Amino acid sequence: MKRKTLHKVLLAAGGLVLLAALTTAACGLYVALVSAPYVLSGPDDAPVCDVILVLGARVYADGQPSPSLADRLDNAVRLYHAGKAPKILISGDGEAAEYDETAGMLHYLLEYGVPRGDILVDPQGVSTYDSIRRMRDQFGVRSALIATQDFHIGRSVYIARRLGLDAWGLPSPDRQTYWLYNRARESLARVKAVLETELRPR
Image (tube, rainbow, N blue to C red; front, side):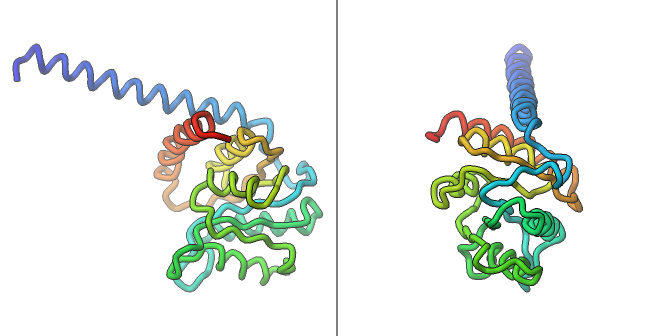
């Protein structure tokens, strides 16, 4: 390859990398600005809503929730017993027999004293967007408290708000092992969230 051609290729590649970085940063900032007013500092600040939404995460082979998921569930239990919502909606990937997030979540909530009649189960919440859209369309929810970790709460609240829900987020403790990986992944997920909410029918 001639030097002049190589120079053009490198410039084009550099331009694409810069564009991708700027797009990622802009989407991340936009999501943060939209969601920030609705991220709560503690349970006492939480308004009364239709449901408390617990977004799925890893469960182990024996059905036990991972520490991060357990923290989300503990957060939901506290809000429920504080009277912040009459129902808890658990949403995750429950379609595969060998990996059922919602079954593990349900068992955990029952163990911690939440009546079965107050637990709604969505085993088709395979992504944050799907969980929130289905919460609105399949369960008729109009207001929700969302329990998830701090790195995830902004995107979750942003999606819910853009889908027309009166949503609030209360961050759960963050015991993520792969801290850097999760935040890098979240940066890309925020770009996807903006595209989903702006380009897909609501």
